[in-house]
Amino acid sequence: MTTKTVNKHLFVWLGSFLFGGFGVDRFMRGQIGVGICKLLFNWATFGIWSFVDWIVALVKAYSTYNDTEDITFINGGYSR
Image (tube, rainbow, N blue to C red; front, side):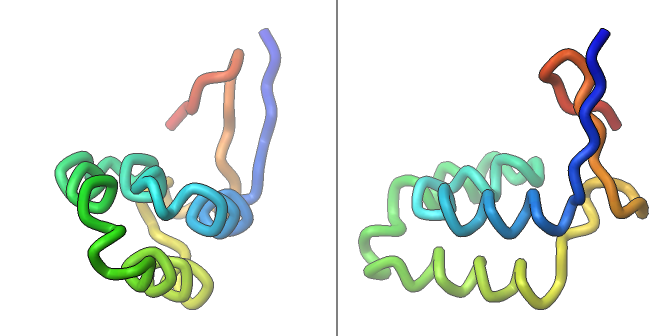
């Protein structure tokens, strides 16, 4: 069993920056409906929605991942 620990702030910032245009940052937080809307309609906002989500991620890391500073992945899967 392989275990990898990642800082949650870095994980959210990079996920939002690299994949925010596709709504992946919302999927990572468990907001499936908003993620689908962002995937379908982000082009209509000319990417502003993704940029705002990225700024929010920089200011406040989302607390979906418990109250710890780290996220643990076991065998490639996210472990709460």
